[in-house]
Image (cartoon, rainbow over the protein chains, first blue to last red):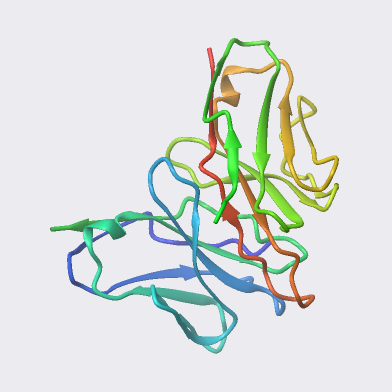
Length: 110
Length: 118
């Protein structure tokens, strides 16, 4: 099981770029890296997924180095509404895609 | 469009009682997942269905927990002889069957059912 390690919490000012790094030293060849966002009293919401190098969508970017033992979620110009818990998951379709860990609680400060 | 729905949104019960929690996945999604989440913790995996069958039930904590999905759509999580430690938010998610054999599904979550065992 490819466990993940993330910082427990982070603070950022509005308008700044936020980078959250996740360590997954035991990632397997078939594993993808997926990030979810969760607001209080809601279920998690998919943000982005990648396998290697860089992936970008309208919400975030995901940077994955060549060894794939870590990944960094980048949120450009955060706003107060980005205050949430962010989870990094590692796994493939056969399983192991279910381990959320404790996530990173991001607080955006005005 | 309709997302994943869960009923009830809140359930209060007494220790020792039986409860059922319902999940309606997104139409056409063949995979369905149950998680539970305690305050300050991430979602904890319980069980995963592919169609009508439980593909992975390794997360069910004990034999008081059981889940069914008889027609491959709606699922019910059943908890017998509830205990105070069962109090949590129970989350359901669904996803499409992967188009290829390798990609991880994107899971779409419902709002959860908050279970309180007194």
